[in-house]
Image 1 (cartoon, rainbow, N blue to C red):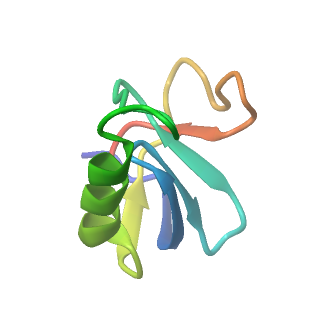
Image 2: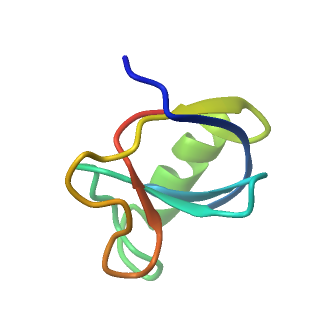
Length: 78
């Protein structure tokens, strides 16, 4: 695994997006979970929170897109 940045997950937005201590919003590349109001949103958000909230995350910058369509950093792995 290539590591480009290391930070701590400080907030979980939903099942595929979270904030890190370095002040960026991160979107997991190739992961698509339900959005707010959709079936499965709570479960996906809870799962990601249990996995990474307060933990050090190792971020691999996406080789194709640094930022996704909503201005979030596009990252391949945590």
